[in-house]
Length: 215
Image (tube, helix red, strand yellow):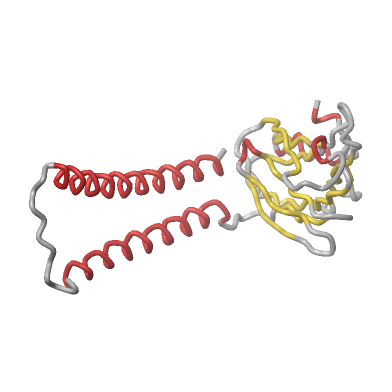
């Protein structure tokens, strides 16, 4: 998945930088500790400040901070950059204790839902290679749509709509969950998200948007 690749790049780079800083601080601390244990005399500095050293220190920290902010913002831009085709729109509603997925752009408005009991899980069907705009809301309490394998999570609030866009570049099926404790059956509030080819997606919509494509 493109999103997982971008997340992996950002996380790896930030982890490397954090690791280098940690090792540098650990090295300085270890050197000071060994020097102290060796019994070497330590003459405290008579200077109350060291402007040049402090300037270098602040400049290095500032450069790292600016780099991380710009890098992360650029990667987010790559993930959510606009496409030539308008996005597929899906209206997602969380309720106690399951999900409803509405497709307002279908020839006739399509809706997929379930009870989240046993195998009766709703499936969010999306086409590959096209941006999909998810509009999240909740009917009763706060829920949270979470697809662990795709690194997507966003809260769903009553009387409010949160929006994000995803693009899946290969076919597959992944389990989604509710990540916000929302009551008695929160633990079972699961759903499937399935990416199919654009042709199969169009056929699915034309046929009425049932659950058959998710099998």
